[in-house]
Amino acid sequence: METTDPIPRFRLFVEVPLNQGAEVVLSNGQAHYLLNVMRAKVGSFVSLFNGLDGEWTARVRDVAKKSAVLSVDRQARPQITEPDLWLLFAPVKRARIDLIAEKATELGVSILVPVHTRFTMATRVNTERLTAIAIEAAEQCGRLSAPEVRPATDLAAALGAWPAGRRLIVLDESGEGLPVEQALRTFPPGPAAILVGPEGGFDKSELDALRMLSFSTAVGLGPRILRADTAVVAALACFQAIRGDWRTSETKDPS
Ligand code: SAH
Image (tube, rainbow, N blue to C red; front, side):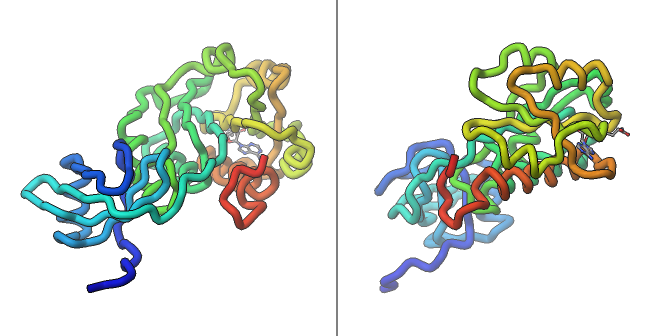
């Protein structure tokens, strides 16, 4: 008899309550991934998280051709408060939008909002694909939640329905934004959002309007023009290092 569980090699996000003795029936896709791709077997340990109940160790109890049932054993980590950080991004071409979803998840974004701006080229946004990418990234990076991917909206609509108290960091490629480090050091605590423009950049009138908003700060990321996906990664890294959860070894929301 084993006395301590080995560290599970598999980690899955599930959308059911997790508690001792719970049974989790995996969706076809997850069962396929676990059994055929990862080659888990009856008895294999699996980590489960659902964004609410922390992380739990479970075991594969039954497998069939296209399904698997897990039994939940014990809590390995309690739920923690993860950063309340949104990313609004203009949709870009497929490979880059996929990268944005993956990297934003690893960097702790809680909600991803595709927003159409004047010069946005990509039209259709596949929210389901982005959600699947975000979930996979969350499973891989050890988060205890998976970010929500909102349906695409117009920038004007997103700003019109802006929630009170949330600061908006506008990534401003014009060179007129505050240097990012300076902006973030003096940034008020509380919920925040980062907005990145499309490959064609923001229209001048868009940027002027964004700068006028009472809740926005236009920020520069240095003297070079970055691709949108690079700007996302750079801005999120700066945010987490200066204002977010990279400041402490504890994974608590420090703001
Ligand atoms: N075509 C535009 C560049 C757009 S880059 C041009 O040539 O000016 C895509 C987006 O990345 C921009 O809208 C902005 O949000 C962000 N970005 C790129 N470089 C940046 C920088 N140096 N500082 C701040 N934001 C930047």
